[in-house]
Length: 146
Image (cartoon, rainbow, N blue to C red; front, side, top):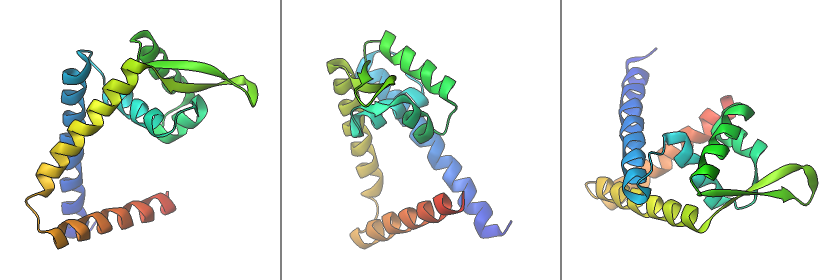
């Protein structure tokens, strides 16, 4: 591995750890419930895609269906998520945020965006645009080669 790749990976891990910690802190503040990173990601995905099927949730989270099912069960028990039969396939269910789930998800998103904005504020406008462009490019290449 090249020195550049090693440094990038190290910095990416540091950033990922900070983002995971930020999400946990925001979840604790927003709901009083201890949500893990997977719970938060699931809520974000259902906020972005209401009516998401549980199988698609598992794929989007990169987890096996049983892990997604456990996550859905946990979020349902906390009153943050509900399931409805899929009208297109009686064997499947779709996922929906409850009013509390929407409130928690939107609060998490607002708080996270505020923290990211604060971090990016240290960069000039052109640097922010370039950073965002480069991250998107690296993500596309990574997804295509996976």
